[in-house]
Amino acid sequence: MSESGNNEIISISGDCSIYEIGDRFTEIDLSVFSTEVSSIEVDLENISDFDASLIQMLVLLKRKATKCGKLLRFMRVPDSVMESVRALYLVEYLDM
Image (cartoon, rainbow, N blue to C red):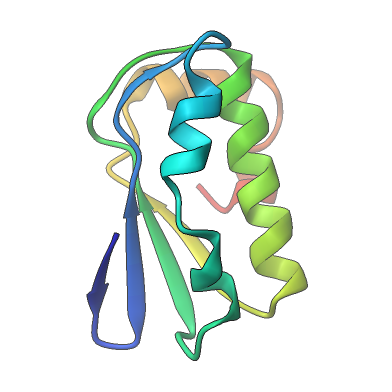
């Protein structure tokens, strides 16, 4: 996680399948949701593999951000992740 202006950047990388998603989730510092930053950007560029578990985690992050009054943006979303988000009709909800 890094800070850029009044934004925080969270990078998610590696295997994001059901077998590894718990590790990816514990790598995220959720305290960022209770800081003074106005927006949080989630960088998805370096995801190597994923399944529905990743999408569930993205929805969870979106819900947490909304509850805490933060703007959440996903950046550098791989085409394969975008296809899954479209197939699940979550583009609008996740603001992708």
